[in-house]
Image 1 (tube, one colour):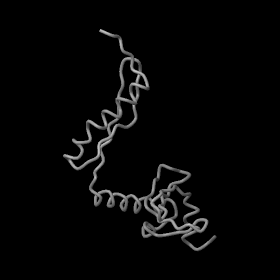
Image 2: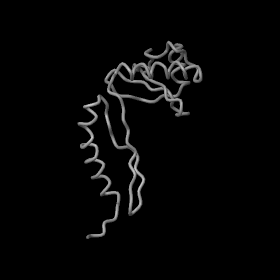
Image 3: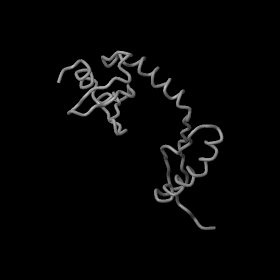
Length: 131
C-alpha cells in the first residue's frame, strides 16, 4: 500500500468533492452544507462542516433580531435596518450588523447588489444628514 501524506493540494481537491457530495443532502433537508476551515497534519485532516438554512424567512428574522440586539451598541436605532445612506454619491442600504467586527461592523448593499462593510460612525453621520 502506498504511503500518502495529507497536504494542501490534496485538501483543495477533497474540499471540492466533499461539497459536491453533500449538495444533494442539503437540498433534501432545505439547507446549504459546505466545508469550512480545515486543520491538518501529514496523517489527518479535520474539516468544519457548515450547515445554513435556505429558508429566507428564518434568515431575515435572525438579521432583524441581531440588528435590534446590537444596534444601540454602535449608536444606531433598531429602525435603521433597511435605511439608505449615501457615501461619495453612491446609495447603500443597511442590511446587517456584525458586532464582532470592531472597525467595520455595519453591512450595506449597493443598488447593484455588491456588499460593503462600513464604520458605524460613517453610517451614523450619513443617516443624520451630515457630510
